[in-house]
Length: 248
Ligand SMILES: [Zn+2]
Ligand SMILES: [Zn+2]
Image (tube, rainbow, N blue to C red; front, top):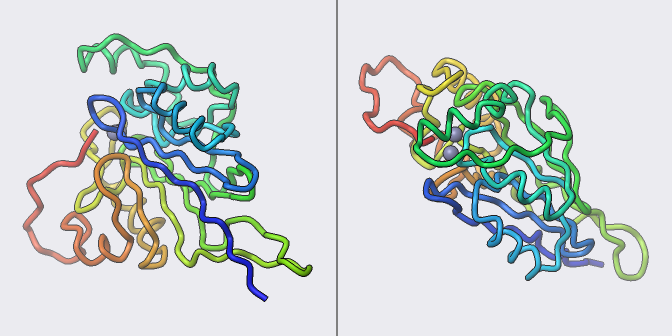
């Protein structure tokens, strides 16, 4: 007997003038959601949540750059959900005013950080769970979230028994660590090219080829495509380094 699981709700909204990809991940059964990187335009995020009748269980920040955290406080206030980020980015988060000044924009209000994320933590909402990968380099506290193909809900099958829904592909929410054809810039505060390359090679490229990757800016990709074709990640002794820098 087979039961067909409803697909996870996943909406990606590019928000703000730097077009940070805010992800809304919802459980179609329990209507619980995780919101990742509400950088701005919180009204649009709330509209998506209302449209799917979702209540927010947790708000995760992949790193504390202003384009990713600008809407944290507003979303926290509107939903009452806890804000989670890695402790190594708290310093950066405390200096939102400096980031704002650097970009010439008014500083957004700061949210209360309710929980610090660490490597290996599990973030849960509805029947879903994502594991936290600490991927420093773009910032010291950058994290990526990985939903394995088996990370989703266990459903009661019709006629009894339990069946694990299998969507077949894992999902990686990569923040500004890995982009389609590029990597995060490392020339801002706390950045390290050595660290970001180590993070990507040791923690991201080890995931299965068909893993869907949703970066913090720009289009989605897969681990296989990036392993094969991302010019920043080719091993060997070629002196050619790609000219284009990553994004903020
Ligand atoms: Zn960014
Ligand atoms: Zn960034």
